[in-house]
Length: 357
Image (cartoon, rainbow, N blue to C red; front, side):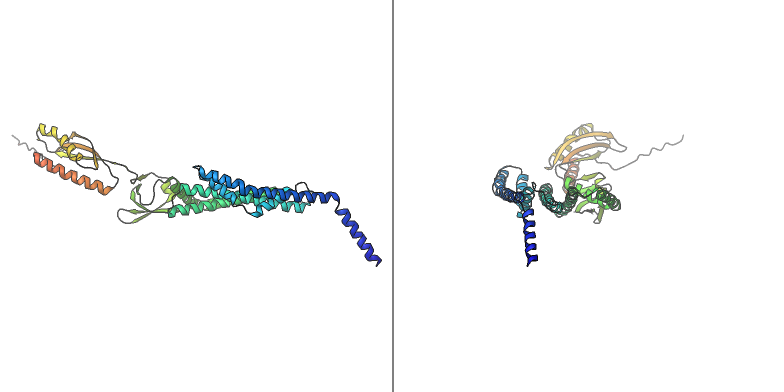
């Protein structure tokens, strides 16, 4: 009985010495601070962010709505951890408990910053890229890369603020990144080239392009290669890195095509008719609705003919339309020359033989 009395008195003395008035005051102050900060954060979310969202919707820039929408998605765990971290700053906590609270605060803070950054990046990607299959693939790859980079930086920041030495970890990541980039150099080069193609849009699916000696219609733009359907029917597969490193002629973006062709007439044609030929050629070309006449001149004295050069513009980027127009122009020239009695010669040679005396 005596032993139990002594133990009870010792325990009571220990509790009284541990929980003094100063400690209870700190706890009370921390609890009050927690309630106030938590209430202010909730009020800010419900009132201020709502008004900011309404204001952002009235502006032409939609990025404001994206940012406010991202902040409105912040959950209760974030508010609780932030309020707890702020409320215990004046208290002398144990190192372990202080590390846990500070680590939780850094994790939720960086996680929310990363989520907001992700939404802003996805917004800009969706605005700059069209809704095609290739554009969605590129957007997904960029989103994954951005997430990996953001979370890697966030993890390093958390570890660094918790007192860990991250220098060796950063060095290891740098060496590993260099090794991976060297091993995947060609693949990564093609992938980043596909980003350039999708973002800059030098050509799109359905465009008729000429790459070096190859020409055809673009059928598919992938992450590594682009497929072109040639005029002969075969499929040409070209790496994206090669496409971005060479000159590409995109005929779909052609607004008008400059056409130069020659018309030959026979020697011996009267000078009066030779003088009237440019006017005749102008009338023939101008009769076509999709052709804009530029000039027609007697250019040179050929080996067996007098050569006229005709220049006009076809107001269509379709090659078939150009060929149809050129065919009608050729037939109209033949008809006009036939009416005027102008002869188009074929290659001839005259051989003069002199007899010896």
